[in-house]
Image (cartoon, rainbow, N blue to C red; front, top):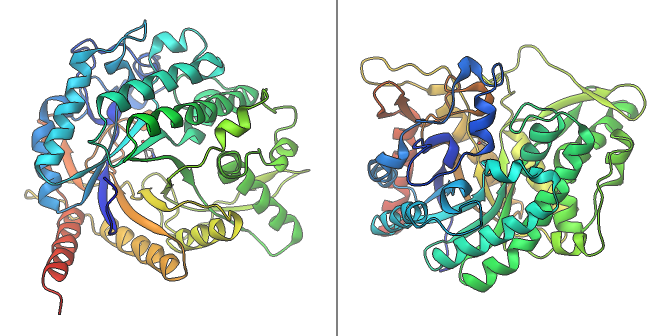
Length: 443
Ligand code: IFM
């Protein structure tokens, strides 16, 4: 099913939009458990209902079709499709079959992520990603889904942002399951990456025409000053933010610098693990939002510099589109085996308000334009970028921040579940329709 042409799309993830937390045999996930712990999620919100996409998926696919995108990126909820014994749950699997049929009927291509953080709670009860066995359970899950959905998926991603799943989930406790031991963060990362490597052969065997890859959240750092110490801080930040994930995948080793920063936190790596992790992938998905400015702090450490008077989003993330070009070109220089890239997430949260039936999210519109321009510059300079997905199709459950941080190009009224395309969605649609016209009527 490999097709040519640049892919434009929009993305979501299961726990953030589906709701229907107790329907059709879905089991609890670590996010259901985490949300129930007082103080973990703003206003004690959770994904029980979210965007009610489980029931409204058909209307949501109509929205995507009206936008004129080529592809939809979504994730499968592992606890919906397998029971505790690892047996398939047909009712859960049917939901994704209906969704994929609905996409095909509308001429939309599917980019499917297997793990966007909603680990079944029963696996967490056995140690979650700290338990090496979970990597094999993940490979079983990948095997099941790629057998069930073979032929309908354009690209599989094993994981979305293992950095967040490992570091925020096990290293600092901001995300489920809420542990805060750095050493656990690095071990969880190792098992997540191992699970990725173990899943690849099944994806390839069961769905040979689909692409198989992984998605990483990346961000460049810039020195606060031109001193050697601040440049060294940039290097260290790069090891922590980018190379911790990308070096094992593309070089088969963890960056040594990281163990100077996190002394004594090396994970237990068994023979054969790194070979499995570094198995070739067809594409690499990159999620890009912002940059860091850092300076040296103490021995072999860095700290963030919060510059005043720069453009920011309501996440307090700096808007720095040039960083996307810089990081794409840096990866191209660094990894001779860099596979084709998809920008699998790019977008921003803003304090959007519905007024007279409209949402005038001018900053998001400009953010998307400037980032896509930066991506195009990297492409002109030789980086093989194959697609660009806006995060997110619609406002949704933004993890520990709950529903207040709105990333969607479609506004969701969480009381009524009414969807309203924001100005950014209308601009994206206008751009995509112009492109379609230009392709249909070449001058
Ligand atoms: O909403 C998240 C998404 O789940 C993963 N990438 C970053 C987004 C914005 O924080």
